[in-house]
Each structure stands twice: as C-alpha cells, then as structure tokens.
Length: 400
Image 1: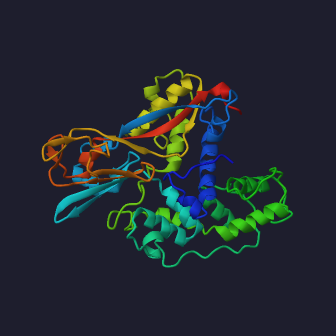
Image 2: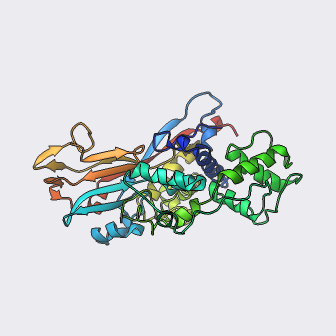
Image 3: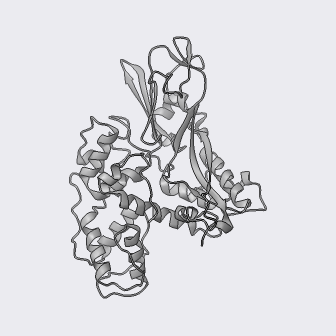
C-alpha cells in the first residue's frame, strides 16, 4: 500500500490506530477521481511508480483566501457566516474586551476528524484536544446525539448495517443493489466488498469474488473496529461549539470545502478539452465540480486543464490538503515594518501548525495591515495566499 502520510505532519493517526482508515478513505477518493471518463487524473500510487523510474514533478496552484463571490458582503458578515467562507479556507474571530484579539484560520478537511470518529469517541476527543488542548467536548457537542453509536454485531455477515458502515468510513457509496453476504457467497458483490476491505488494509490477496475464511475474518475485524460515527460528526459541524466559533474551530464546515469536491474538481478539469480555452473549462464541467465565481476553482481548473492539454497526467500530492502559503501586504507594529511570514521576525504574531493547515494571527496592540488596524478576519483573508500541490508526469510514463 502506498505510504499515505498524516496531513498534520505528525503520527497522530498512527497513535490512534486510524491511519489505515484514513488511507482507505484517500484510496477511495483517488480511485473514484481516476475513473472519470477521459480524465488525465491518476492515482497517487501510480504517479510514484513511473515507468522511467523518475519522480514526478511538483506544481503548486495558489489563490486568495477571501471568497471572491462575496465582495459585496460586509467583512463582518463574511466573518460571522461560515457558509460565506468558500475558498477551502475558513476562520473564526476571537475577541477580548470588545476588541478583536486573534483570528484562527483552518484548511483542514472534516474527513480527518470523521476518520477518528469512525474509530472511537475517545479517538475523536483526542483529536479535538490535539487542536484545542483545553477542550472538554461532550458527545452531544461533537456528534449531535446523546449517546455514542453502539458497535455492530461482529458476526461476519454483511447486511445493510455493515454496508452502510463501510460507505461512511470510506466516503464511497455502496451500489444500491448490494445484497446481504456471508461466508460462502460468490460473485461481483463479493468483489465490491473485498475492494473495500483491501482499501482498509484488512484483506490482502486476490479479488476473487469468493467469500472465504479470509474475507470473513476481515469483515469481523471491520465490524469490531468501526463505529461509523464520522457521518454524525460531519452533519453536526455547524452546531458543534468546538468548530462553529463558540469555543473554537477545528476544520472546514462549508459544504463547498470538502475533500470529495476537491478531487472532483481535479478529475473533471483534467479531462482534455482542446477546442476551448483552459479559462473556459470551469464553465463546462458543471457547478458541482467547478464554480466559476470562486477564487479557488477556476485557478485549479486552469492548471489541471493546461497539464492535460500538454499530454501530462496529474494527481494531488500526498498528503492531500490546502496549505497556507503567505500573508501579503505591509505589516507593521507601532509603525515598525515586520516580515509577517518570517517566524524569526514576526514576534509570534503569525503562527502556522498542523502541516501548515492551521494558522493563528494574534492582534497585538499597534498591529496594522497596509496602514489599517486589524478589525476583521475577512480583512486578513484578502491578503492570505493558500495553495494545493499537484504532481505531474508524462501520461505515457504512468503505468495503467
């Protein structure tokens, strides 16, 4: 299995026993994206197994964090309503004594915390505390229910509940006609099951469509391991006080800022369209896959289309994510200009963490941006550059 990395730059997922689950979720995304008709998008594992033996090139696509479609909306409204924050960046403003004291920005996908919730409530709480050390979240706050879901019966039978659990854990729909399976079953539905168990690193060997002892053992292991509570966590994000700004912010909650949509954007914009300009492709792939009015989608789409037209294959670099790149503008403290992006010079005012997916700006007395005091997160977002890394190689060099 390709060694997918923890996007926080730590071994936290490994410590929680959740790394294989996160990898399974990513494998599912790469697989789905690479099967879009005529796309040049390729699984990351293929991009690191080139026929030439070379490493793929890396290209970075950058854009501004401020939601361009909301230019007419007040900065205060953009700050307060997270659905306005749609550029794969979200933030929460903290105040003290009636004045803005800090702004916390995040580009973390909810999928990370969903993976932890799928394992156990304790793993999810540990994940929250890794971000907000003083947090003491309840089941109701994180999942929107009063009790943690009960584990499945580990009987090795794949009925509706087990299919649903696999669907939620892998973020991959199960075919509508998926039947109940048990030891001795055969056929294509067993292959569907074996693929999912392999993605979770619970099953090796061939996908033979035969539900034997190994497949049975893998199903039992999955039923014991996963609660499938990640979907409850995702649905409750807007009500979760540790994410909606009441007590903090963990990850992105806007329906436009999700891992599946980023993969869908890349895959659909990587389908060569030689008869139109790359700048026009975003309008053609559909608003679900690319929203023309955003800052992020058109930039990503042009980059992907340009590579595809050049005969290249491309993929999202591992670990997949949107990173904070730089704060622009002229920053001063009491009139003295500082390099806000240099940790040695910025006096701890701008701090990046969690693999550059989390950033905090401390609004110290005398801090100004382009001569103006800091009064909103949207003001800073207009100067904040973020980006995604893409790996690129000649399509003919990528194994099929």
